[in-house]
Amino acid sequence: MTFRPSFVKTAVAGAIALLAGTASAQYSDGVIKIGVMNDMSGLYADIAGPGSVWAAKKAVEDFGAAAKGMKVEILAADHQNKPDIGSNIVRQWIDVDKVDAIADVPTSSVGLAVNQIVREKNKVHLNTGSATSDLTNKACSPNTVHWAYDTYMLSNGTGKALVKTGGDTWYFLTADYAFGHALERDTEAVVLANGGKVVGKVRHPFPGQDFSSFLLQAQSSKAKVIGLANAGGDTINSIKQAAEFGITKGGQNLAGLLVFITDVHSLGLATAQGLVLTESFYWDLNDGTRGWSKEFAAAHKGRMPSMVQAGVYASVIHYLKAVEALKSDADGLKVVDQMKKMPTDDKLFGKGSIRVDGRKIHDAYLFEVKKPAESKGPWDYYKLRATIPAAEAFRPLAQSECPLVKK
Image (tube, rainbow, N blue to C red):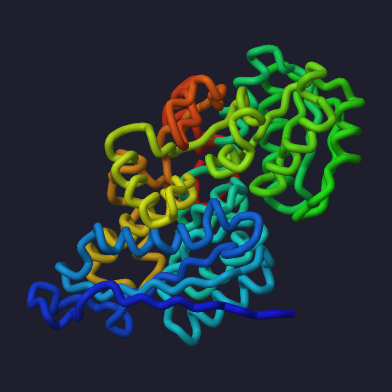
């Protein structure tokens, strides 16, 4: 097994002792350490990767940590989408490097593993990259906050919209690991609840390259909708290969159940046009998202941020607000409790809250990818079809299996 943490340490604030107003603060080791862990070079690198590290650093800067006398350090590592590597990194970070919070963590199998370790060590897990809704359901932890999105939100948005507009028979093409299974499960429940039918499903290796045999099975099913329960490079390759087989020209619709703006950029509007998708962030939603995204783009050769990278920024800011209020980062459980007590408010997701199960609540958006002729310029890819209110976007607490929820 290879283990390459690729640590990147950045001191981003001044010494605590410089400001008399924070003399009573009790930050462990005198430093608030946040580890950003994700896929730095593989199929999820564009949606997270170095962009998430930038977002965390930017959060510290915009929070004004230096002016408040809070010394904050950002570490970064590549988990290579492997739970064993991710677990080893997190244990070393907590036990040796004294890291206080773990941020991002895409790949649900890694996120679930980190979720358990952070609980055992009483630190903080700011998860924005993993999609599985289990993080705030049966696998919920009092030390975890799940930001940005999850499989329930995705299925409740895209799945429901397609069934209600005639896509009542489905065939699933699913990545064979925790995330794919959760997305298929949650979307199937929505399809059935809205009068639809699932006529078949097939699971592909993660990550995958050749999807031809799986797509041919989906094509032969005659299902009106082929649900792609995968993400990143897997989704891009699935859509490209589906186009080669003429699947959409034959009358079947592709449902990208987790599609990021970086995926649309890779596909191009000519291929991606008409895709319906659900996200909780888009760079061109309002003045706040546009301003921050332009800063991100300036640092990333014109690329716009994903909702995962936006989630890292927002979750780190709210974490720092909680630490500041407590004047301590030592007890992860107390920090997360404080995060839940405080309303959330930032320029990327607006006003929201964190529920008892750790689920961050905010509006979600149903988008349709524009036709090439509708786009006014680079990265102008989405048109808004519907806003899904925060109260409707995520699994109701009444349906929760989380032990933290009192029925």
